[in-house]
Amino acid sequence: MSVASKPVPRFVPKDPLTLHPETRLVHGGTTRSPYGETSEALFLTQGFVYDNAESCEARFKGEDPGFVYSRYSNPTTAMFEERMALLEGAESARATASGMAAVNAALLCQLSAGDHVVAARALFGSCRWILEDFLPRFGIETTLVDGKDLAAWRAAARPSTKVFFLESPTNPTLELIDIAAVAEIAHAVGARLVVDNVFATPLLQHPFELGADIVVYSTTKHVDGQGRCLGGIVLSSQQFVTEHLQTFLRQTGPSISPFNAWIMLKGLETLALRVERMQASAGRIADALAGLPKVERVIYPGRADHPQAELARRQMKGGGTLVTFVVEGGKEGAFRFADALGLIRISNNLGDAKSLITHPATTTHQRFSPETRAEMGISDGLLRLSVGLEHPDDLIADLATAADAL
Image (cartoon, rainbow, N blue to C red):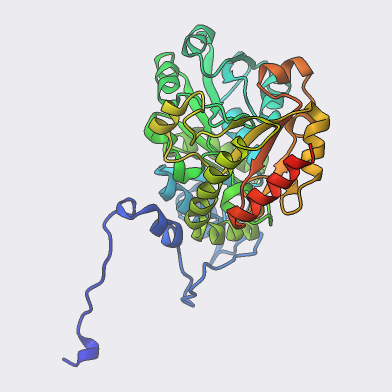
C-alpha cells in the first residue's frame, strides 16, 4: 500500500455540541455541493425541479426529503438555521425576514382567540405594540407585569394563559429578569416561555438552559453585526416547529431571503470575536462614563452597582455590548450630548461593528406616553450606547468631549 493510499485518521466529533461555540460558529450546519466549495454556497433560487411528477408529489407530501420552494425552505437558509440551533443548543430553528417577524411568528403560531399572554412591561416598542395593539384584534389578551416581580407573574396567570414573554436584558434600560424563575412559574400553569435574547446574544446567555421553551432573535443585530441586512430566527423544540411554527411560516410567508441567510452565516463566523471585543470595550466605557461630570447614572449589567448585579453574574457570562446612561438636562441635554459625538453615530440599530447611540424616548419608544415611559424607566435624559469595534480609548475620548458640551 502506498503512503498516499493509507487511511488518514480524522478528528470527527460524534456530537457537534461537544465542540466549543467558536468552532460551531465556523463549521456548524455546513452542507457542501458537489463542487466542494470552501464558503457555504448561496442558492439564489425561488423553486426546485423534480425528476418526475411522482417525486414532486412525494416531496409535497413530505414522503421524500428535500426542498420544495424557498418560501418554505432553502439550502442556504437551512445551513443558517442549523448553525444557529447548534450554537443555541436547540433542537430546531426557523429563520425569518426580520427580528419582529420572528417575535410575531413565535407568538401567533401558538395562540388563538380566547388565549392569554403574560409579558414583562419593559420591552422593545414594537414588541409592546404586538402585545397591546395587534393580538387583541384576534381576541388574545395580554397582561403586562413588572418583570422583576415574580409574585406579579404568578398573580397574572389565568387558566387561559398560554405564553409568558420577556426580554432580558431589556431594551433600553438593561433591566434583568430571572429567566429560570419565570420559566418555573410558566410551566406550573401550563404556559410556554418565549425569551427575546437579542441583547445578551447566544454567547452570553443560554435561555434554554434556564428553562425557556422558545428563543427569538433579531439576527439583524449582533449576528450580521455589520449593518448590511435584516433577519430573525425562532429556536425551539422540533415538536413545537412541527405542530405550530412550520405551517404558520409556510402559509404566511415571513421568510428570509437566501442572500440574507448567507450574510448571516458569514457573520456567525466572527460573532465570538466581535462580541468578546465589544463586551470588553463596553465594560471600560461604562466605568469611564461613571466618572464623567453631568452623567447622572450608568446602567451596565457587568458593573457592581447594577441593581441586579448578582442575577447578572448568575444568569449571564458577561455584561454585554450595550451601556445605558442618563445625562443632565433631560431631552435637551441628551440631544446636545449626542450631537457633540464625532465617532459614535446616531442610529436606532445596535450590535453593529460601529458604535451607535440612541435616544429611546424619541425613537424606539416615542409612541408611548411620558407616564408609560417613566413606568418603563425611560427618562428624557436616557441614552443607549451600542459599543462597536473601535478602540475603546477613542470611544471614551469621544464621550468625554460630548460630556464637556453639556
